[in-house]
Image 1 (cartoon, one colour):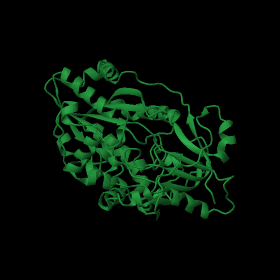
Image 2 (cartoon, rainbow, N blue to C red; image 1 turned 135 degrees about the vertical axis):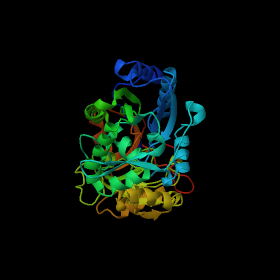
Image 3 (cartoon, rainbow, N blue to C red; image 1 turned 45 degrees about the vertical axis):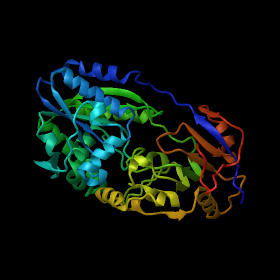
Image 4 (cartoon, one colour; image 1 turned 180 degrees about the horizontal axis):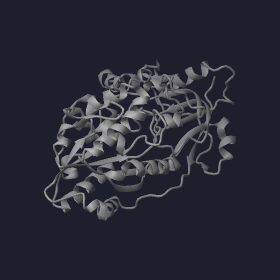
Length: 416
């Protein structure tokens, strides 16, 4: 079969945007309920996770600056569970890939895998805390509040998650994930509440992004208000969350997967797949075959989530660091996400393979979409069969005339 022609389209999203990150952070720190949390000469730990969050380096630098203005002494601690190969040096490497360095942020980075046991929760879960953070005079949590890729609840991915799974390092991540989704739904918030009750957490800075992956909300929240306020900000995040314009496809081609795009490599809320034993798969969207073409450099070989795809390429396969991926997946216990899909020589071979495995699909009716990754969903390519559907959507602009799919000499798509 000849591959169909495609057109380039653009989704138009709406939503608020923070115009100046530094001004927004400064305004939040000037709130009376936040001002009283920071005293002169306090040694304050500022957490950073492993996600590719919009403006995260600027937010951390601005937070460092505000702490210094109050004559306290800030430092940065990685709070990313088992990421970075579950090693302190690996986690510092992840921070550097996010643009978070001592020079840029103006504060030292202190990393360890050692933890302190603070007791147990009401769910009988152990409560662990990064030893360096524990020995500080207080911790400022910084994280994006968003939909989780493994479960749905009123607390998903945000400040309570970075407090528990993140700040508890590899040991806490293992303990929570050992109970699968139940651990995330029940133990994760319980551990966070126990940490809040310990008095070691001062406040959190919650970040919410709009559909353009831009910072929409920056909010400093005193620790005692985090559990309730995070629920409200999660609803804001859901309202701003982007999606693909079509719920049914024959083949979805994803140019690049990676930890900087989603904790699961590709966002399960976008692709409509969970692959977690015991959890019901989403009814929509329904994409018959998913192709993962490449792995981001920022992932450092951690191809967690590759198992969510049906097909991949030799290019991606050769970049997989099995140790990093396996450590991450074993921590989550979601083993199917580490399954290696069929490996094809190139993008073109992978697409043709998907077509071969579908009865009744031809050039004219092949419903195909190509996206950069599951985080950037503004521009994409769709096959001609989807044009009538796209034209009915009010937020879609068609940017090109129908064109042939363009591959390089090795069979990989040319630049987006």
